[in-house]
Length: 72
Image (cartoon, rainbow, N blue to C red; front, side):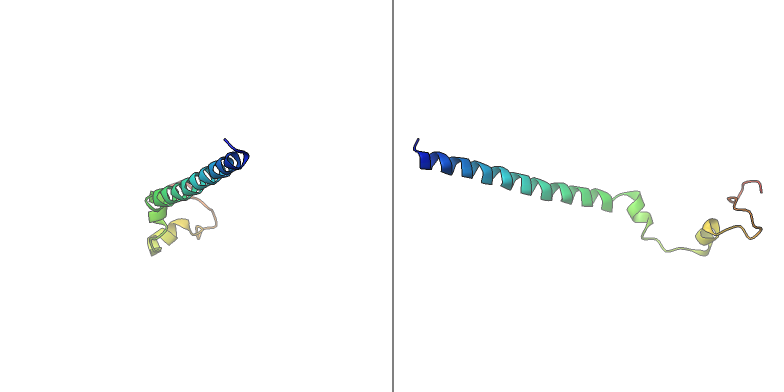
């Protein structure tokens, strides 16, 4: 194999490996986004707050920060 052919082979190999890495990265990102879109946490974040849910996270008017159903 001539010197020029061997250089072309090495350059082609690098381009091929870089191309595979780029395609692999895009596929990995796509799979991760799809998994995150289907997770329960992503679905819960789209729900609007209701007065009941706000009451659960707002401070207790009595001055103590206990959760509903817990002793004060």
